[in-house]
Length: 149
Picture 1 (cartoon, rainbow, N blue to C red):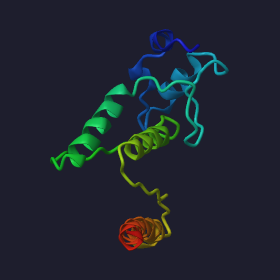
Picture 2 (spheres, one colour):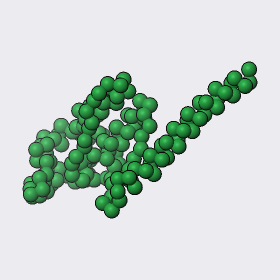
Picture 3 (tube, rainbow, N blue to C red):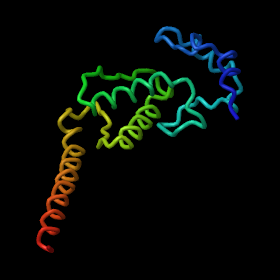
Picture 4 (cartoon, rainbow, N blue to C red):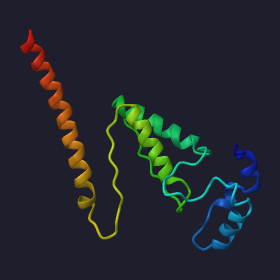
């Protein structure tokens, strides 16, 4: 079992913050724990053994999803950070939370050589067709029930 307290005692959050001009400090912070035991390693969105230290962001996302569902205004969440810090893992967890709450979600990966429209049209089109099928199935079952009576 991973001991988060021991990890953060060995490598303070401040030491893990890498500035663009401070690569030596960041590199040293990566050496402060045995690399084999360290659960915090880049994995392209694969979930770590435990999602530690992100409770505040997940609670903020839970509140955001609930307020929007209740048609209440809420601020957006913007996740930023260096490669390997857990942005994709957090996005995947927030997507899972949204799906459990009844939201439909879509994913798109940005590329420098593609326009925003080219990135968003395929997943939006798929989502709209899915929503249309769901709406059509609801109308069909209602008319089918009336016909059977």
